[in-house]
Image (cartoon, rainbow, N blue to C red; front, side, top):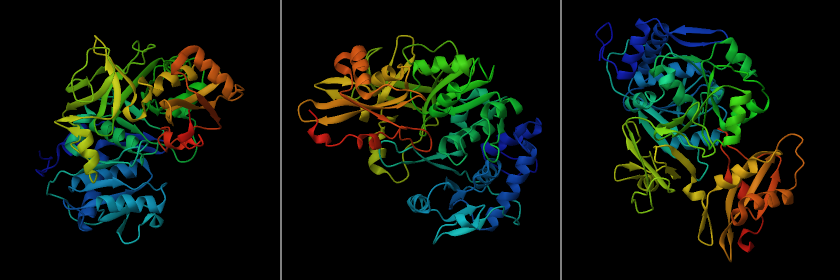
Length: 478
């Protein structure tokens, strides 16, 4: 594809140029208003500077820039010159950033602050300047770090072409105004902001310093508010009577209990969308308004993707039966950067196995039961953590719960759980155990600990390995 001057460019940049011709707004916010035409001018100028600094098709750059708009400009400029990029988040420790840079072979770090440079790696100060107009075309891409909640984090390579395919499964971005309170240096936030641009929507940038999410959404006419489970729970708890009106609220990243879905619809927004997906695949399915019920379904699979429920050997299971989730289709990653063992485990015979358990009903609705590695086997009875968590989170004093298996010398594994109470909650661990037994019988947790806060990573996902450490002498559990 070529631009107006005859210069070749990638499909992603060509699409942004089409939006520029339509006069669309690319980014907005407090003190921010920029159209696609101006955005592309800045991207081209930055691409010239990167090329002059020796960044091109053989480069892997680290980006350490916290500002939403500036980060997007650099990300697009890196794609423009054919480089691969990985976010080295400014909020992460130097050791963590250094480790990621070494894993992917970062050749240069682009940083807005000299303090974010890394020892032994060439640093390029942002903003860059100088350099001739880039005329060559070579498709670059992004390297995205998975959450790492169940082990070492993997690095997922997605070309700009694959990002375009994934973006198309988020059609509401096409004419909307997206706001994600999470910083752009988080994997999910960066990915969806790139989706938004690829669909011709407007990114509403995060303001500097603390802000009121609901007031900010109203001020900037946000049409889609994309939240983590933790963010959604906090906003719903502090709001009443549909505070966001017709603004669509999307929640993803973890299972969303039915009780929380109802609370969001009643207190926060009438239009709730619960999304299921992964870093490797992008959005797989979405349950929208009118599709939320006690089953906890995440909706029907997006067009162009195939999802199957199979046993451990890969044999298809009947509708309604719980098994391993596997999927295939355009836009799904083909493996990990430096994880041969995980690549072999997750990418098999043309299918991606995300490690989730789930079921498909007769109508094609997908329900996720939890991670296969988290499943609890009590004397041959399979118990999904979500079963226990939904019951505990229905207790009026419980704000959140996490269930997990504990090794037992007699039963193989026993279910245990940790809970975080709502403000003012006074229920005890023994009372919760009795409550769970009343609702779950043999499937109830044998022990429950009450924590001030459930341990979570920076994206709000619960860290079960840290919870397991709260239970002393696990090998002696009977």
